[in-house]
Amino acid sequence: MSTTDSRRTVPRQAVRDRLVDAALVVLAAALWLLTVLLRASEPGAVPVWVVSVDWVPGLLGCVALWWRRRFPVAIGVVLAVSSSFSESVAGAAIAALFTVAVHRPVRASAAVCAISLAALCTYQVLWPEPGIPPVTMFTIIALGHVATVAWGVSVRSRRALVTSLRERAAAAEVEARLRAEHSEHEARAGLAREMHDVLGHRLSLLSVHAGALAYSRDAPADDVARAAEVVRENAHRALQDLREVIGVLRAPVGELPLPAVEDVLELVDEARQAGTPVELRDEAGVTAGDRTLPETQGRTLYRLVQEGLTNARKHAPGAPVVVRIAGRPGEDVTAEVTNEPPQGSPPAGSPPHPDGSGAGLLGLGERARLVAGRLEYGPTGPGGWRVRLRLPWPS
Image 1 (cartoon, helix red, strand yellow):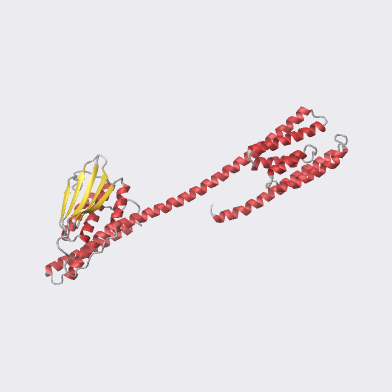
Image 2 (cartoon, rainbow, N blue to C red):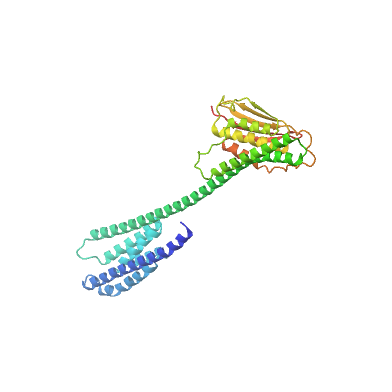
């Protein structure tokens, strides 16, 4: 329930409570007046002095019901005791007993009920009702009190149930909102990983060849033409990849093609064409289709090779890279990308590659955890680097 709804509900509840209180006071006053008139029409049944003073506590009891919600037990006890010498206050006393049963625990209700029973029975002993056996009168009084308390307890239980259901509904609303926020956060994080993995790979190729064109102006025309063609081709592919990533936000889940482990061969070919010597050792036979790797594991393995080749091209240009995939069904599949130190030093005047932010490795770590895998990375020596991924391979 929102704050606005709560503010609207409180005044409505207060108005309804006041109307109920007014109606109860009017009903008790009607019973008081009826009792006074009946006693006045039956002289001799009750002493005259009792009839003369009986209307005073009865009228005060009706007025006291206006504060029954604030002091239910106190008013209930006072009116119950008053009913031992005043018959006209009985209606107000029963209303007070009902209020105690609604707003207070069963123990308090039982105590007030016992006091009221004792008081009314005392009145009947002192001034018995003519024509009605005492046992019958006591039975009527007891059943009336039990029914009043039972009615009040049932109302209290129903209100508690409604309150509990409202609290559960509010908690469910909050939980649903938190789940939606969590799902949105995961979707954004997944989209960020996809954009980094896909566009980072393409843009690194563009950066390498664009840098070669800018800092090798005296290169042969054929080399310049090949580098320009690679730049053009990868710019075109980067645009296509960007459209596919944006399409994830628009297309239903499962309609867009996602990379698989077999596409690792294309990554290796692109890296070789870009001038990076890459050796692929597929001991598991997953890239050639000899064995089938689950879709999620295959896509995670593809992203590892993509990120490893991208980082090697950025931080160790020209260094040999080894991509090794091993494992068997029922155990684990292991993929690692290792690059040796870069050969020589970068040409004079060439633009340095800034240190990476580590977002790619963080994204790989998140992907690995989603499929119960483990990512390890670190240097292998001066200038060398290795990234290893271990994933479960169901049989």
